[in-house]
Amino acid sequence: VQNFRGMRATILLGLDRNRTVLTENLCKLGLKVQAADPLDGTGAIEAALDGADLVFFDADLAEAITACLSGDAVRVPVVAIIGLEAPGRLLRAFELGPAAVLHKPLRSTGIYSALFFAVNEHKRRQEVFQQIQSLEARHHARRLITRAIVLLMQTHGIDDDQAYRMLRRDSMVGRLTIEEQAARLLAERSAGAMRKASEV
Image 1 (tube, helix red, strand yellow):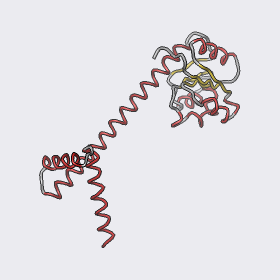
Image 2: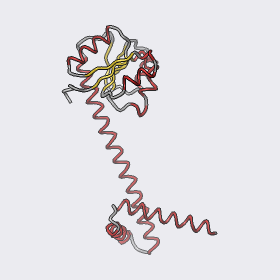
Image 3: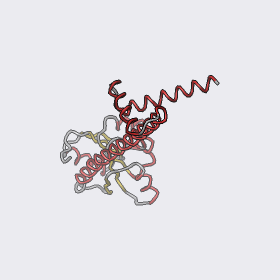
Image 4: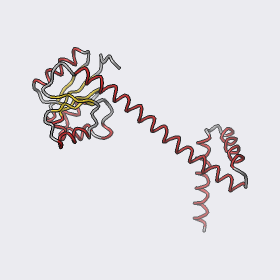
């Protein structure tokens, strides 16, 4: 991504020269800008974040905005604006997952670079996260299929190839994926075991 025109940027920074420089440069790049002073409270921060595609935040005030930006709230690219390089402040800012940084006092140079890296690094992180989720889902599905095959082998006294063919046939008859059929088979077995246990 190289063209950021039309994106909505939120600036969480006190009303000072840094905010003015950042706002002017983002507007020149075609972004729509909304801003809030982090010291104005959670309500002001949340209002400014509403609909944001990108967030710039004051790393010196990271503690004040952590509740609004941490965890699942971070769904957009984030840029940290660093003033004091104290380890504690840097750690709090780092925990918010910035994909790029700017240093105070802000100048026109560097803003486009930070924007470029933040948006594209965030995009790459999202792609990696989706790949991990996909791999985890496939791993879970394979475990289900393996357990279902073992169950069929034990129940019908057949080998693994026969059990797999049976599982695949039943999935086609039921118009389910093989993973869904495996999950269904295991759920039915579990329900049956629970009924037997309650009858004893």
